[in-house]
Length: 516
Image 1 (cartoon, rainbow, N blue to C red):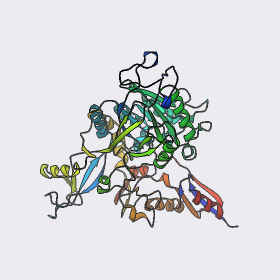
Image 2: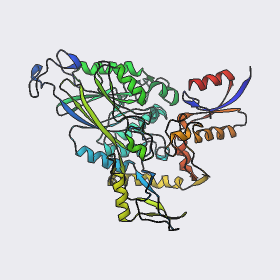
Image 3: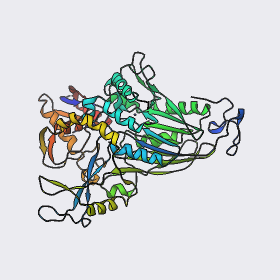
Image 4: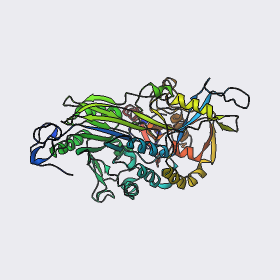
């Protein structure tokens, strides 16, 4: 049998070639205490009877240290009067969107417009840009505390620098009066783990309008163990059985409104909802799934499902499942109505994308210019015709915080180390639609441009290897045409992975690819 010298970069399961108080009394259905009564009636021991309640859940996930705003191109053919240096009509402008300065404003504004608000983050807050490479989570924690989340679920990348690295980040996250609880019911730290002493909780119970809402954290077990760096003794329990056990615990305490805060992937969340009894809402992450209607497709993005996606749990009751894409691009806004029994009676909402009202265009190869006021108004009107798009002024405090870190980041952003002659698209698998530069139809046949190039680059610098295998999740972004900087390289490959050479048989290579 032939034996090949194979080079692998952190060979993982996603390889490609190329995350209170209880009440006494008998518990009835859905954890109710005694019999129901109309609003204002008293239950056992003189406690108020359960009542219907409306919640507004504002959420984000997988920002991966993408703290600053980013941009996308918007077709303005026939919409503006601006011309370039050659006197040709401008057909495309750059729209600045997302980033924490605008997101903090959006969270605060929307929270102020509604009662009974929850602000949630479902993990993978860290690793992905120079803001983490240089500041080890301090920058992420600082801007997250400007939102002041009611709960934060651990993701797999929270363990990239081991349990001690996670402890450092959580110390920063809890360095202000905000003190966001970190949730992970299925994570059991080792006795000597840096996070063993009260850093994480299985769930938290919050009260809105006199009603208790249980929020349970679930991290993706296998992926975290295999693709991240938790301490050897830290265990990750089965997601489904752990979720049900904690739902049951909360139900026995009389809590009948249950939210799962999961870092478990969109399709897994749908399957999880169907297998559990007593769950009402799942706010998820990890798969970086954009949910929504044709608005996002019209803007050049690739929505993968409805927001919210509604399925039934094991009791046949509705469960509302949501996720809010990635990289601080937008904020999810979900309205949920519960009846007196704690069952979801309706849910609705949409992701909201904050944008700046200043749009720039290419005047010539060296210069960009901003649209004048009249053209700006026309573009704003066209974009905000979609209710998901919201012109947002950056929060001043968050902008000032960000400027403290930007001075060091900008040095590496300006250090050019190469260039790309064409757009290089990113996909995890052919036709996925993950790329922000290319339509899914353009990547269906060949898969990911940049992932293949990364694998080839590693093969090129490893002369003893015959084959290079690069895990799909290790390559993070598209590469646009133009200069390429040190910062771009860190963003493309942000993880502290190690190059490894292995002796593998042909059958083992086949098995790895099939398993991935």
